[in-house]
Image (cartoon, rainbow, N blue to C red):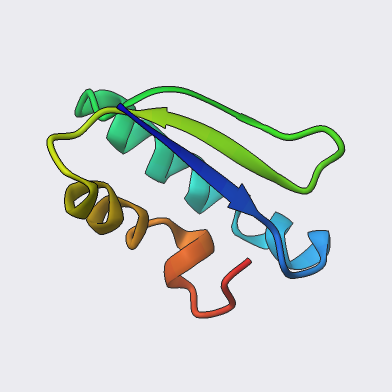
Length: 75
């Protein structure tokens, strides 16, 4: 079990541009059984994902597919 902590480093206006793609990312990994629970932090500074995988490397590979990470804007 892994806890993924997301912390926004860009303004929310830039984060908001990627919300739709980020939600698709979450749905894909909920469907695969990797994600169990997720939500945004309050105040809105990032988010949290509870996930399961065999290894940390597997989780790192999944996180690399998150538009917040892979967009090179690193929201």
